[in-house]
Image (cartoon, rainbow, N blue to C red; front, side):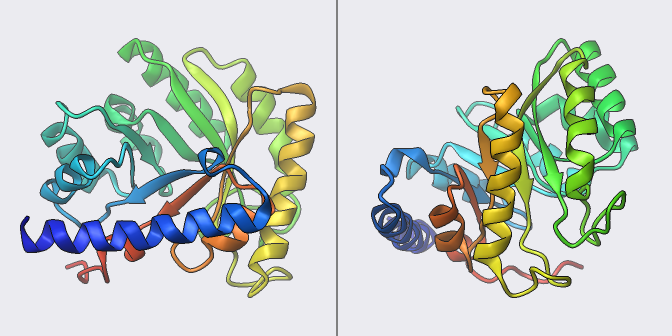
Length: 239
């Protein structure tokens, strides 16, 4: 076993222990929570190692990194998630490889994704990114729509050919009433998910929690956690 494979295997095992312990503490079956490994800034070779270790869900937040990496790993049975802020000029590229876009936060993006999915003959899962630090009617510093904008986007996704509303995503906010209160933030997201699922039961995916706060997310009810550093190590600085 190579040094890098050993390192990733050890890190992955530690994360798995954390997820299992958090599920047990919350009284949830382990299989209710899916691990998504965020591989940004790391090479396709790491993705291949992770696949060999059993990882099936990977995420990227920049198209310029994701597109060549997805192409290099096209032979692997992976589900690719796009989790970063998405500009409309990158939509066509992202639709070419992403199975799920977790950062849908405006109507223009819905229409662009729908058009690109139609041309590519693909169906794309979409999560509405909720910004819990946003004022009513606004957007968050790191993308996302304010909670009062969720229903409008959900309705647009309902009607968008090629797109499937899969659920909600959030990033624990650094400012506002939920800053430093990850569990409260994730509880709020779950309240929004409950409201969404009242009329859209299939939109049951809740993506929340990262390396530092995955336990809080699982306790609140998250179905997917996005973990990068705890699996891959401290990221190299971007040039």
